[in-house]
Length: 256
Image (cartoon, rainbow, N blue to C red; front, side, top):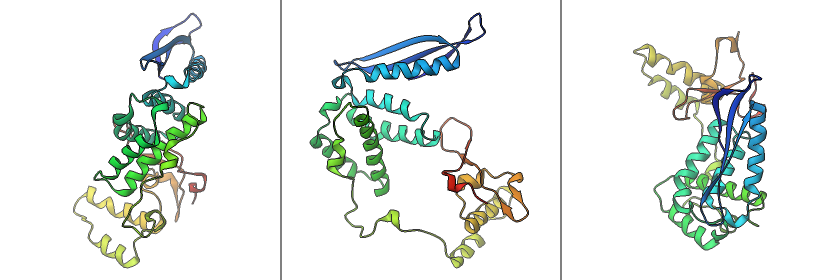
């Protein structure tokens, strides 16, 4: 549900915005609501109105593509931009190619089991497959919340399991021992300025446990004596965009 700033102004000096909402009707055809308003606040209000209007369409009119568009719009102000981008890439790459035109009411357990079997056979890490499953399931949970479907059919199927793993890989903490770190750091190249930047990066990571985004976001003013203040993070994974700075991952991550 994009908001476009047209560049025009009204007599009060407010900019003109075009707010649009795409959805799928009961015949599977794409439709669009559109509204022209003046002012940024008015544009956000119109956006919420059009989203409510699209969700009031009959549930049987929604395809997975239509659900995807509304879901991504709803997540835009609820999760970080990097997480939003990751969700979009997962759904575009692993869900929409299979179910783009499928009506929500046609997402049977048998059809979804076929998709799961196909995903399980792909040459991807087990953690990647499980994350794809969770992301799709989260979108279907949203559909339940919006009363578009009564239940999430993926929950009856269950996530992908690793038949050869006896331990949950997510529960095992991986870390360098002191001896491993010494061996690693001694192998770093120090021939040029760019090479020498690796030494402080990995040293901070080992001795503090800071995340890479937090280390990359450090500024000189974050250092006071022998104390580092962690108060922001940088994301470098959003294609076509410059670095995005944001608060740390959670409240507990604000630390010294």
